[in-house]
Length: 367
Ligand SMILES: Cc1ncc(COP(=O)(O)O)c(C=O)c1O
Image (cartoon, rainbow, N blue to C red):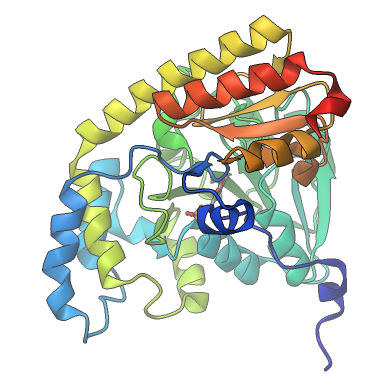
């Protein structure tokens, strides 16, 4: 087959082990997954009812423009309806952006320690990928500005950043937007937006009034607890929406996903509770780190990236056998780190207790 040359340097994306896989492999009845930054509290109770009402309509295609959801979301964010585009998860929006704006003779700039889908999609489109070293888990904005040139089409800012949880401050984003040409898209991936509580986190919706090249992506997969339905959205200038619409699959978001997203949006009390519980659970991990003298990045998300000061592939294996799925840092090029998603209080207590035991054993005995 005459496949694209660039496919030779990438392999399929590995989303990590599922609960079912781990149950089968280790003969376990109970497995806790704290590896994909899903919401341990599920989703709003409103969602089930909204989806049930949609079940009788499954024989007909969904609304291609997701008009009801569009109206609801535009009102809740305070943007015009023509500034929105929906995707089968943010993953699809990232692919649409890459497909629309990247190709050979273009380059794209990102942090070297960030969400891997930007790089993967850029490579598939044949673009040059320019990765800028991070500074303590944070995007190096000056480094990013230096890496941009006249062939740059997209700068990716994962904010807050996956896997570190750190964030770009508003003044840093403004500096970037002021320093680069206004025909270069700056994509702020705000997948964890609902968890953020930093006062200096960028108000990107507001900045968009001034910067037409700013694109925001957000998702219903994380705090809204709808990862299984696959729905995310982009907020951008109407001209960018028009470009993206050309590559969007006609019926890319399902009836069920659209109905669920509307119901989920209407229940902001659920989001507030999840955010509060998340903050409380994070405190547990911070004190665990202090107790064991481990370094971590302060996080604005529902996960934490901890340097365990020992190789974590083995540690992650030990945890698997005990029924905990976490992400070893080797997947991000940081072999002594782990990324752990906040679970429920009991899940976190159990994991921290087990991790504490493991850390008190010599490294070789964890095998
Ligand atoms: C930073 C970031 N962006 C995008 C995504 C993809 O989210 P979605 O489920 O909306 O495709 C993830 C998922 O983990 C993520 O961490």
